[in-house]
Image 1: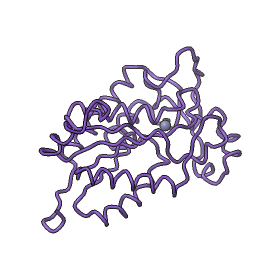
Image 2: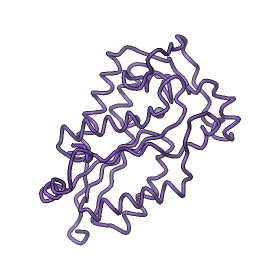
Image 3: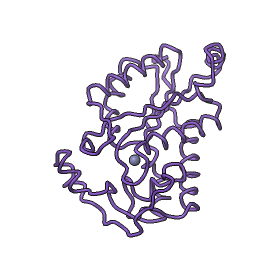
Image 4: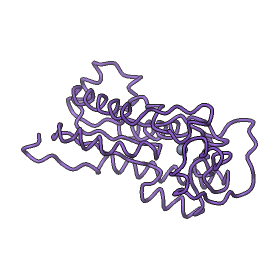
Length: 240
Ligand SMILES: [Zn+2]
């Protein structure tokens, strides 16, 4: 149920019997040999599939997030934390004003996760609302499914290489890259990050079988659906 395929009358009717909505958060940033829009593609696709399964409206995904460490790679767009937090707050307020009260944010990018603090700040001002920030790739069942395939798995490695994020005509390296030292990475400005991480893969093979990837995707769908259907904490009487 993409918002792009609904008019306001239809949404008005929906809001008479349900108050859930999905907002995907992505990023446009280097993903080694994969699409620059990998995080955006994955979060939006997961949101649309689960929204369709459950009959819940899905907003267009935000294609830009916080990725300052990748600024030295061509194509990366990074919003400052201040801009991003204001953006998320404004969107949440608009959703609330429309009548939504249970907002599932499907986040596809680790660099966006600090927005949780802003969400709490917003919830303090809207105690009757619920906002669930779901970092889909690191949720327990999905993470377990990934680790079941290979433990060396990270940003821009095989674990993000789905049929819908790999690019036609691009030949992938066939070796396994050793895992990067993330603590070391965190100390560096963007130019040094680019030097340190080379092609951009944080560690792992570049591709695994579609069978394994589809199993991971299936797990992510089930886990996300479970949250959308049963992951909400009921407001107490005073919060309604
Ligand atoms: Zn990614």
